[in-house]
Image 1 (tube, helix red, strand yellow):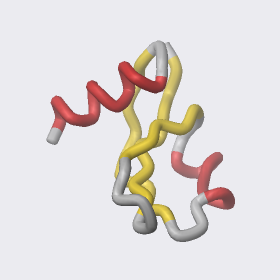
Image 2 (spheres, helix red, strand yellow):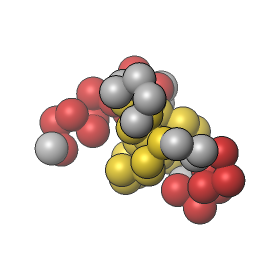
Image 3 (spheres, one colour):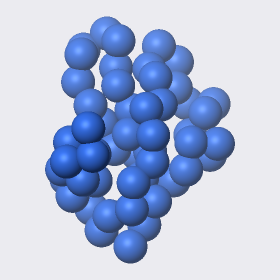
Image 4 (cartoon, helix red, strand yellow):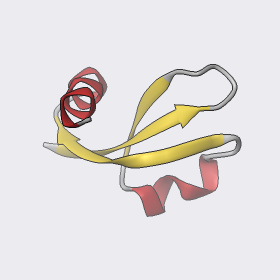
Length: 54
């Protein structure tokens, strides 16, 4: 299992899963918001896990 940061893009209105924790991804956010972190095997599983949480 890996840690993924769930990212919301203000520009596109889409969710993304970036590998790594929030602190590691902070410098790459730009106009995006880090919503939280989940553990998963793939990006798709991370998005699905996040959607189940909310």
